[in-house]
Length: 367
Image 1 (spheres, rainbow, N blue to C red):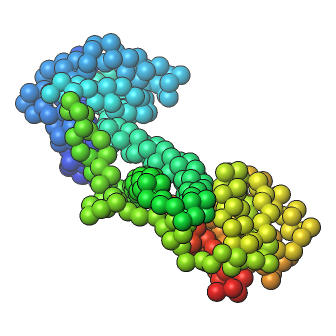
Image 2 (cartoon, rainbow, N blue to C red):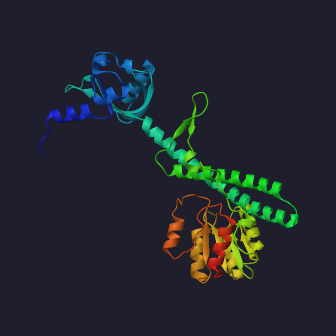
Image 3 (spheres, rainbow, N blue to C red):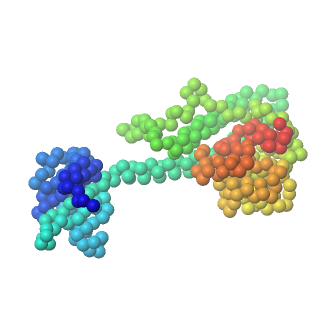
């Protein structure tokens, strides 16, 4: 293979987006490429012949790099790989970088200087922070959706109780208070949904908060023409007792969700057994016959997907509905279940009670 002319290497070094700086044995800058000009802000004329100390926050940091380059225990004698340090831009900004470099020797073995390739870590660190924030957003959404589901279900039952106990009395004030709670719940749910949408997006907006600080813009998920509404108790279309004679198994590792879902279904005359995880649910399935299984997706021991497969294999006549507090299904459990025959998925908590009752009716042939 023919040897590449020197001009190829010169152009590669000059046009590289990485910071590439060469110094002589006195530590004076003799090569400074386009990537360095872009990241550090100095022109070639401003740095040529100057000490490399110009681009370091302190002489100690420059010395640490050279010591590491000469230390055979670091990488190899005369070399360093991904040595993390800081460079100082013309603006005074200190930039975190990872430097890979080598000492340069002549044919007689005399040290001539060194050259280093510095990778600007700002974008990498920013991406790492975004990845962490995405995980936090998904976790917050999940942890909030479970109690939201319980609050919503209990609010439905509270409204029913108010109407039942009041009889013919005026309940306008009580209804206004319930409506106020309902509206606040809708706003919280909108915020949770927006957080989860942002977790799956590459971009998000910010707005000014106080004293120059900025906060994430959650506006797009919130209705602008009035509060979002959640259908409650007397407003849903299911008829009392419409699930009479049915036995449903509810599996969720959040006790409040189990209890509130059970109460909603019991209001419709349904016999409900709860399980705190997939293993307990599987045990109930071996002991009793169920008309439908409602299962959380993420559970210890046996997750919703594994429980679905067990029911499909051993109780194929029993329909399964999966529920999740995650706005998007990170492990594709819902998707895999659909591909293997699952129909009627309660994908996102909180699930409105009317929809919950309606899906159980559909799955059990009561619609």
